[in-house]
Length: 123
Image (cartoon, rainbow, N blue to C red):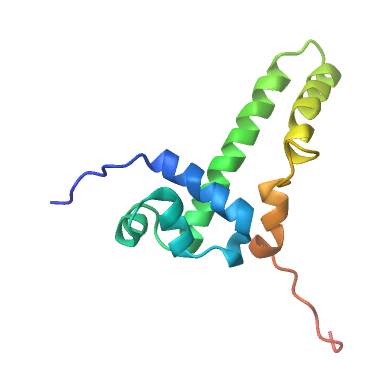
């Protein structure tokens, strides 16, 4: 029988997110993640899978949070224009300026997630 997890997986994802955000996907090693989370590699693998799977879970949580915040702002009305303005004025500072110095995790990692393939000259 497997032992129950003795750590908070959401907190581990949050800590791993910060490492990926700071160092990028390619620059982040499992040693970096274990140092940040305090978890051993076997625990990380058991909970999240390999580095790719962990990264995709980090992105999922990040996107869930963005979508939840957008839905909350958009449901507050009174008009669609006001709701969108409220969402943008709340979201944009998180991804730009001093507060958003790291940028948007999705945009920063888009080249890793969706690599552009160059076509050969012949087509």
